Image (tube, rainbow over the protein chains, first blue to last red):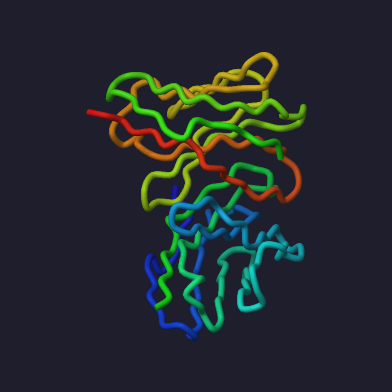
Length: 114
Length: 111
């Protein structure tokens, strides 16, 4: 079946511009995560959605970062006033039920802020 | 979640078994052992997980010691496409546990 998809695959933007990154989770998965990964580094947790519960935003690095999940499916991660340090690969993962279930990752969006 | 220790890198000849070790001496009773891998420029990929019994699927086998303080991921017949960074994670299956990937083991499969 279809896996997690993300778009765009690559995004180049200028410092100060806003960007939106999209994630389509596996159909029926109720849990959705956003992570980012800088070059050669491990995963950095950003935000977690579970069903209709309030999201866990504890990993968002600043108030320039926000995310929404509409209808319990598609999620959008928005970065306002981008900075060069925001350059990274942004990864989305979904899992069938609880957050503790196995997570299935998308291919990521490579964001480059010039 | 308990910490894990893995060798930073390993080589394996194509067609041979790749055995990737992981130490998790502080694992608690309700923590599972998970393995993921990340091929260059791709998102992480789930491989296998287990609690205390050995597990096998179409990708790999997972051998967990009786005291659960260490485990080994086995790729029975490594191919060039198995070249990746392999991450061993121990975690519970409740709550919002986001994944924490350490430095992992960089496996290079050599032709």
